[in-house]
Length: 353
Image (cartoon, rainbow, N blue to C red; front, side, top):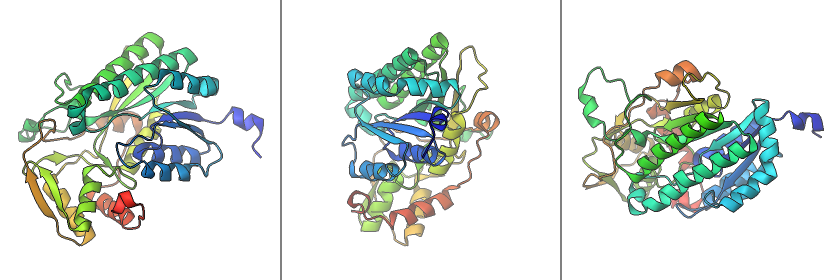
């Protein structure tokens, strides 16, 4: 039995979107370390919620896990959650052992062009609700999942031999999708709350995260599934677009480091970090790696390049390396093999079918 004293000193975190791909991995790592973890997720139908249910079933094995089923856009529902856990979360923050890990979002560049209002309601307005609740309950640690999409179109940089990747100080005033614009707006909003209310904010710009339990709509999972089934895979453009793919274990390393970061250097207690592998490969090379791991040949169906897609993502991780001790350890060749190994063991219909 756990003593009341140990309960009072236990680390505690609220993870929004905690039943999703990245969120469930973060929750499991924290639970394994003995933390108290509350997850809120709305289990929407953006992709098959069976995958989230399976993830939550694994998390429910831990004694100090709690789940709230709700939509972060619902102010009343969020207020009720914080009435329930706010005092405990605030106390954990006072011990430097707690905070909000805000991963919930409407993701995806292409879908954001079809319903931009939904993206701003979820990614911006709901972030405002969380920031207000953090202020009200004295929760001064806020880790936010941003995106490499904020950098916009920088493909021309590949011609510059001195180019070492996108840096956190780069101009991000020219987003090319509503999704990217919503993430920029959320970053700016959180900077305001850090400045006005001394909330310690760490915004993490993720670069194309993949690995076991990855969302089925994302390229690596989608390509693997279609190649395995003998179906053609859609490629937008000529396959030369380059991406900085980041394995889930490396993203977890950065998120966990962000939870204890306290070396803020600016006028307000907010810092932004890139989390990527700092290496790029073309879509064509990615397909070849999946073909090799599966032992099957892809049939490619080319389509015109999509107006919301960028031709390059490339993380400069110097700042994360220096201040977070971030060292990605999984090159794409090893990561793809691990993903395919996981994929081939799954029985969940939405993963394999």
